Length: 606
Image 1 (cartoon, rainbow, N blue to C red):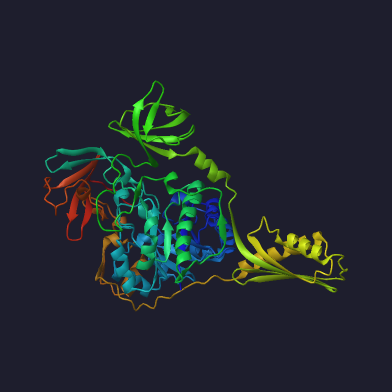
Image 2 (cartoon, rainbow, N blue to C red):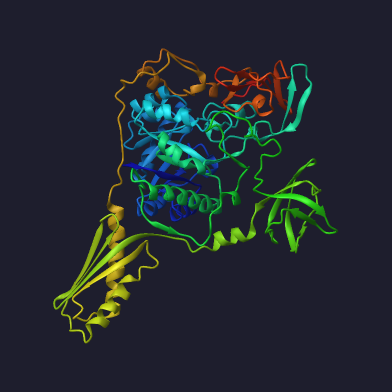
């Protein structure tokens, strides 16, 4: 029996609570410092509030301490980690091996920032005491299978949201243009900027295109294949996304996973609680740059978003004709006043909102870019947004109740679906009831009223209905029993796999390269202890002139039909340029990877 977990991002307590309510099995969120999304920081108090709310349902909370650390930050980082552990978090997600050296009493998960792409790398992390490895987004199903065959560690992968075009934790593109570093939680996202593609003679091959911007990931149709490949945790990207995105996307994946769980007996869900919503989730109606499976089924073209790095939304159709005040779409669709649309045409991308719809005539606020043949996308569905916001969503834990009435008193036991129970008793003299059937019916109705709590009472067993109990007394017992049951659920300890590092594992390479980000003495100690013979100075601490600032499974040549293995017409070195920033593209055809070599002199330092 294997647990299959749905892991949701949370920007703050409110989004964390929404994620739990809409079906997440686990939450990941940042603390005040040292997280890879600095704009998604949280106080210890809010982390503690999240832990309490989540643990009611058996939902785990993972905290992100996944930036690289400098020596003068180690004491603060360790204190932060221990303070987080004191709040009751279930795991720390880390990139810097200094945190492994601190012997923290908590599960450690190797962040995707650790750049795990090989069986050897995953096995090393497992042998060093990591209970989970979060895989690089660019892996194929076959890559994942090979890692699973070589290891027994839990494997987590991203299944939805934005994709880092470069290997996570190995991208220095942001730092090559500014002092903001992705490895320090401040990526400026230069991969989303427009670039000119030029050949070695300086001729412009493509101008003003978002050459490094890739579509967002959507692996919802591949979940069962990923389960069979060895994945245990499905991770949604988006610690900066709003609460509406979380509600919609989390509930969509909850339903997909539940459909699989219902068909199979070898996998189960790690948390409990049934979620009921009043909207039909649809990820196309939340932030999306267009869906992509990226490299999951092999390295292929068609994953780029050259025209725009912004959310375009769901495709509706093309402009069929223009009218005096608006336009008509083909095919017709259900646009309504208040919707937002994105128009992509020969003029580029434009956006506007809809003022009115009169039959087939769509009247926008502006006509910029709207021409016959233009593609139209809806990036804000007003009615859908209202449905999400107004949904009275509840996640409830199914429970049963047993009420016993006797001459000497009354007792109520409520037991949840995991067998946890609470009993409330009153020792008192009880009067006979005048009608046993009416008493049983009234008691049942009184005990069933669990609304406003995290429980739903599915059945009530009544014993001793020949005695009378007033409705007010039954209501008091029910409230006390439900709160006692909630507290009992909070007192239990969720299973954790806290592992030590005995130092016996051998690092798979003699040299720890500058791209591994060894920026402090504890990380250095870690690698030396595990057999490394040489540790290069971290690129994070050096000027990035003439360095490989990105490695990617994405390839511009492949994307534009100029793969070097397929008789291209475009030969020689290629460069991309944005303003004064210039990068040479280097193609490793053996590994089928693209490297960006920084050609712009700079003196950026820590």
